[in-house]
Length: 225
Image 1 (cartoon, rainbow, N blue to C red):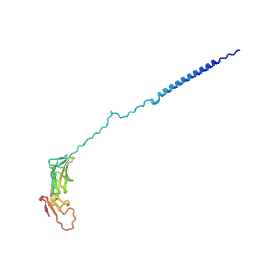
Image 2 (cartoon, helix red, strand yellow):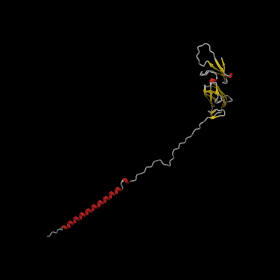
Image 3 (cartoon, rainbow, N blue to C red):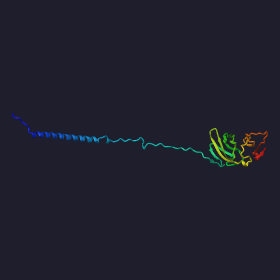
Image 4 (cartoon, rainbow, N blue to C red):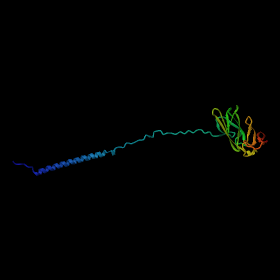
């Protein structure tokens, strides 16, 4: 028998055909892989939208407001007599001494009128107004300018206050300058009837006898022995 053999040219054609098909398949795969990688890069997390954060504060929320209430302040008012009235919750009028008076004694009696039964405080000297509202309170003064603070108050907490300024010149009274405040004797109404100028109150003496001198304001400050 005779064996049939294929020619070499046809065999080479088949090999080349297979190689071309393989190359085409590889090209298609490369194209597909490139397309997949491009799609993945377009959908990467870097392109995702970042959520916005808003604060709880808003322009429409009401802002806190501060209200300042000013309390009334009582200012001194000057009356027709020249007195400075600080409080008027209770009627109060001082008749003696006059405001800005020049005095020659260091002991005076402050007189005036207020509500009957009111408590009177004059420079820490306390008294009570009578049934007609009159009061008379003795006070000690110093040589030079003196402030007299008169306060009237009742059981309900009401107050009236008058402030006076007087000037004392002891050099005009004939009493020794710089001596201690002399001892005073008052009658039942609080009026000054005697002022002892010597010896001074609390003095320590080495003699068995002393000479007591003083003044009686009711007799124009005449010296008494």
